[in-house]
Image 1 (cartoon, rainbow, N blue to C red):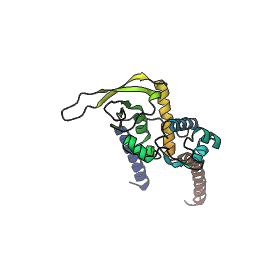
Image 2 (cartoon, rainbow, N blue to C red; image 1 turned 90 degrees about the horizontal axis):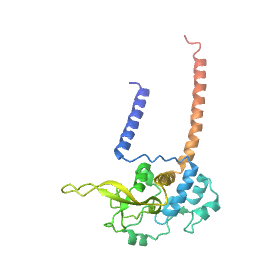
Image 3 (cartoon, helix red, strand yellow; image 1 turned 45 degrees about the vertical axis):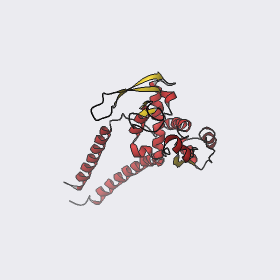
Image 4 (cartoon, rainbow, N blue to C red; image 1 turned 120 degrees about the horizontal axis):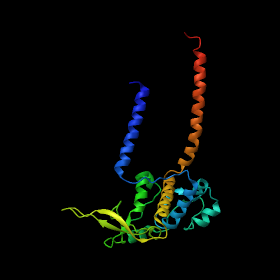
Length: 244
């Protein structure tokens, strides 16, 4: 097998493994798009209204958000900064760590790399899967991440779901068979799907802000490679024209 064929085979194998891994996760496609600036802006608004009270984005600065999302400094500081941070500072939750441990048993995690760690599909499924559970300390549970010590911040938008449990097998706990929307929220299911898509897209952007510029640069790199290949073919033809 030639070296080129070996490389192509390896890439196809890796792609196949990635597809199998995604299928094994069993989560619906989050359908995120970090190139959609309007979606990122809506996602940022949701994050700072519902999430930043507990969760930081310590590797992302307000100034970077303004630059990447096409917002002015005044727009960011007036609409997204609820902690009194300066424009050049990172996004840090205002909740003291001691209070967080007292309320939730542990400090809520920083979400800067959440999508990189678990994937956009997982995050989207998680935000769709909260349900009422009086047995839990915060009154909520999650079918994607069972027994998570986190209240559901978006319940006013999605509404209140309850779980239909499957019969418990001997020696095993009952599992969630399906979730039922018992009390509608302020959004329709379609609107909530879009809201989760926007929020997940923003978290995907936060996990790697450089992805926006890398994508833009990538187009120019491909154009350069195409031109270089064209010139190389012309040079090859010129150098070898007298060889018979």
